[in-house]
Length: 277
Image 1 (cartoon, helix red, strand yellow):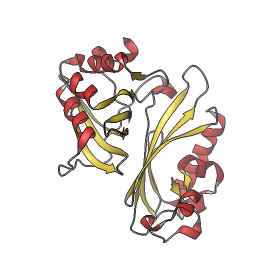
Image 2 (cartoon, rainbow, N blue to C red):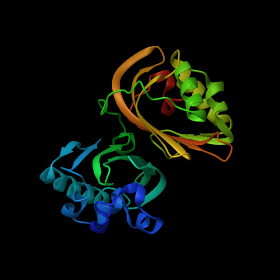
Image 3 (spheres, rainbow, N blue to C red):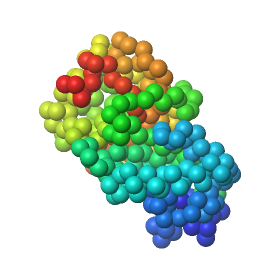
Image 4 (tube, one colour):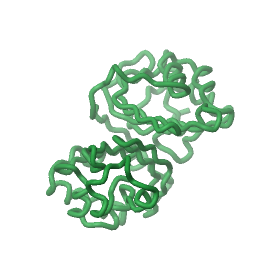
């Protein structure tokens, strides 16, 4: 998601039947296959994209340049394959998760693409989230993209997870998962943890003297997964520059979490940096 053919423009997302839904193209598929002016018609107004590599892209000319630059990057600087991971969708927002295959030692770049939708199903804005670490070997502070929303109230396992995360309680976090549940860090690749490694990674994350409280900006829950856009400005005892991120919490059959996938570029304190452990 979120691109769709001109024949679907103006039809509310909630009214799309299964056949029409399959016609919608995922973000990078559309960039690789369609001209920028066609993609621009999927927007309700002026194109608006925020991307870690490009910053804020606004207006038709900037969007056209963004499409061409991104297409060239996919062709020339990655391994070319874009794997679909998961889609969390409601009438007002969709979060499409993909994995871009990379050349070199690091195998992948996990990416989440958040699109806000107008009432007629067209796009109001797109926010792309990923770490730069798999591409450059370093992190970059990304200022918040949205304001915090204190009215957000989570339910069930995602709420249990967030309470444990904020409190620095590894037992509570792990208890929110099914026994074979997995967490994947923003770098992807080997940074996936299940079983004893799952508990250990949270012990490492909380080694800096406390939890990781997040300020919620949006919550999108379709019953299968809950995606949260957030601001992170504290890691344990340390205040850090406020930074934007999104995480997706996918439920299993029990209602507990089968997977948590994180998309941000926060630099962990040394005590909590899994790449140094």
